[in-house]
Image (cartoon, rainbow, N blue to C red; front, side):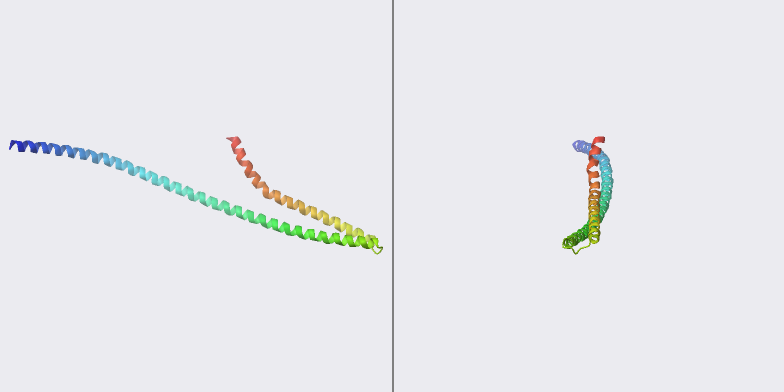
Length: 163
């Protein structure tokens, strides 16, 4: 019987040691679980912040894209209008030159009046001046469209120089 009592005491002691070990594991596990829960919550907050930043960047990019498209559409409209005006002006100048050639031919045959020829020449000169002005306007329009692009190309070089 003393063997049974001895074995019972040994079993009880072993069970106490196991319970103490499990209690320590539970305490360590609880601490580790709490740390993991806190890390998980931190990651969730960071993820939410990054998601918000991505959304803001997407919105800003969409706005910038819309603005660029609007500017491009406006520039296209200006170029189309300028092209239409240039075509009309060139057509008028061609007709004026044809008319002047006919007046000169009539003058050579002796049926033309010098005053009409002078008036025609003045009109032709004015047409040429208008054509030149249209060409200058066209060049200005092209320069105006290219200037922002050139500024964008120069901006990174200035940032590199500052760094």
